[in-house]
Image (cartoon, rainbow, N blue to C red; front, side):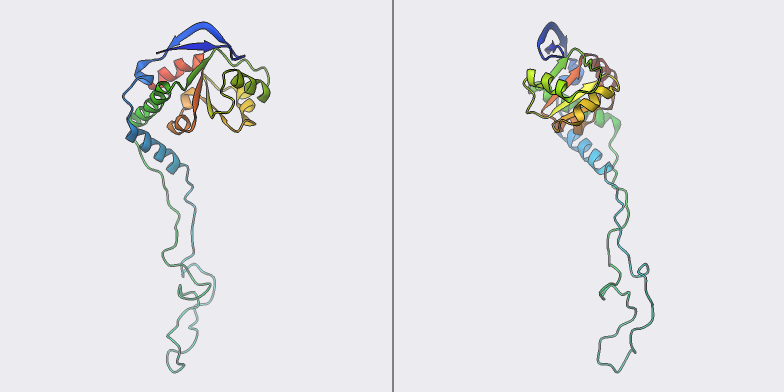
Amino acid sequence: MKLKIHKQDGSATKKSVDLNEAIFGVEPNDHAIWLDVRRIQANARQGTHKAKERSEVAGSTRKLYRQKGTGNARAGSAKSPLRKSGGIMFGPRPRTYGIKVNRKTQRLARRSALTYKAQGDAVRVVEDFSFESPSSRSLQSMLSAMELADRRVLVLTSDVAPPVVRSGTNLSKVMVRVASELSTLDVVSADVVLFQASALASIEKHLG
């Protein structure tokens, strides 16, 4: 599949680039995408939730009143889960939610997600991002010229580019990532994937 390369001002150049079929033309695997998205979201959970059990609640363990003769139900500690301000039975405990997905499956998921974008004409390539200083207006103008202003756009650069990252910070529908750190969740969350031309080589190195 061939794509035109755009200039930073959004206009098309006479150049084009061939998308690697091993990345953008595979047989999509929906289950691999689901597994990898689930892995990313699960690993992002802190799992620090915790409720106190009866042994952890502050207070006396003195028996509240004598066992027999009061007419009340038997009662021991005020920290019993049956009483107000007592411990919690079967409450949440700290745990790790992370799940493991094989690297081969992770790569397949990213390839599948990128293939869906390519099939849906949702991949664009721009020559370069030559922002000397952060400028949200310049980035927004480029997206508007490419008719992407109202769409969720994933911008992929070949290396860390602080001016581009900071330019996208104020734009709610723009995510900026380094191509080598691309995740399946990033791809499926975006309407369009916008590659810096040199980022395609980085993607081929990591996923090819």
